[in-house]
Length: 197
Image (cartoon, rainbow, N blue to C red; front, top):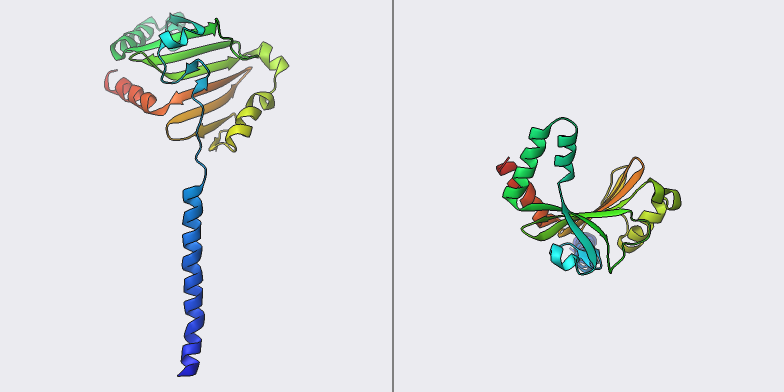
């Protein structure tokens, strides 16, 4: 009988250790720091209105670049369809430039999309001239230092996602683009675009 009790101690000990291991793992996950992405630049942030951005930057409404390209390169009916859809969905495109507030060094242009008067996408663009002064590492290092490893490495860019906002840095030819997205509003816009072609 005593030998049998002794043989049961070892499996019970292993089960207790396993349960403690699982519990400690859950506790660590619950206490893990959550990613909290910035939502743009100071004075140019997701969720702001164009009027709020206009307090620091020059904001000019313009034609959606996709519609403009389609119109310019021989498909004006498709360009007009996009422009009409944008009006229906209350989607606007804005060019942003320095005003009282200055865009950070190296950024040659900035733009934003809004829906119902609220910014849901911001783009910061580094062109060929900027790229002669700044490298991919120069542009991405501050984000890597602040947010750590991206959730996705596409080979030509990095993506961070905190569930509320998404930050994409993409290299496309001679340009590097940094995009901030409000994921809830972006999803709503895409859904509306599918429903109202």
